[in-house]
Image: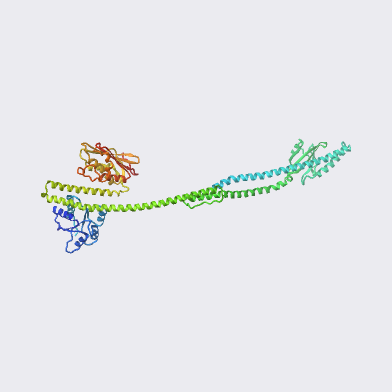
Length: 137
Length: 497
């Protein structure tokens, strides 16, 4: 297994951030987790030479300044960034969000469950999948 | 054109018939008059001739020579000369025949002495006929005859018909041509008159045709005060009234159209607002709820030691209420989403759909859920039909209070629509709540006994009504209940049984 790459979480809700963090710790997924709170910060993070490119981006849609859909649009047209898989993790069950996400090249779409245990299951499923999947260099 | 020909073909032959009849009658009577004239004329000439013979015989008697043959011959000769000199027109003449049939006297000397006893006319004359028409040499002659007994002569005054009818015969071609000319003139006049008569009809027809095709500006103008012009007036009034009515109708139609447009625009904006509302609800209301849920969960786990039994129970209640809140939000969301029903739907065998629903519901062993009879195959949105049956069956199973529960699903064919029923032997619904149970967030059982959002029946009602059906419940408290709903039949629906 290659050296685990970091996971970038783009999320403005503190509790959701805590949940994901807890979930990863709980199931012992020790990839480093970096958290930014909107699309603009995420872009700045990705474009900064200080940071290594993450192996997976977990993206919330409803965020201030630059929302998830706008972020996806930018990332997927960027030559250097478009190979990074982006999994949308959101509260929205609206058809237009699901369709827009996949049209823009999202690798997956998960609705955040209310129940903490279910939330953990969802996060684990995503993490495990991307641990098994081959990754582009 | 039809009426024109009808009138013409009726009147023209009649007119022509009377025309020819009058011409013929004129001709006939003029000929008859000529005949009478000729007869009188011949009579006069004959009388003249007889007078001469009479005079000669009287002369003989006067001188007592009536038995002297030579004197008689002399008298006959004298009479003959006088008689043959009598002129009857230009071609007529007087002649005499002996009773034996020998011509004794004739202007044409060559004829004297000829035996005519074989001629048909002679036989007639011999038998006493005084008036006769005979075929002479070359032409038809008319004659008057009289017997002069003393000399045994039959004296005849004759004239060829050619001469008698000369005038009439000359008239004949003129009358004929006149008749033809008159017929032609009459026909033309009649055609013209008929055309004049039918002209208003044709303009009426053309006008009515234009009105019929929607040109209500049309006015028919027929001068005069006859029935046609009255009819035209009536037509014009009718057209004017139609025009008024149409204008009014068009105005109200436009107003209606405008109103529909306004309403549609309003509805569109309301629909949009609702969508946005649903989006906001799903995002902004649920996010804090999830945070509360998770934080509560962590507190109860991380600080479990700090809570006593009562504290743990409270934390449990918080989590339950959060779940209920989530259910309510979810209910509102699914209710607002029904607005988008698929218009045409899919071919759906309800026997299969409901069968699968029953299987998936996994009712507890003491409750039997069965399909009674056959359900039809319908053309509807499967998700909506599933929601309807799911909610009704879930309710029946959830609230079942009997040790042996029975839930039956059935369908009746009501000609224009299907009538479905879901009946149970559960607690039943008291009559005063029959309307209330279909209202949103209304539940009859305490929520702590049966976790319910109170959206299910409201959802079912909305779906059924969107399909043009209706839903109602027949139930008495304690005796179970039957939910009925109807679904109008569509072209592709059919009964399976």
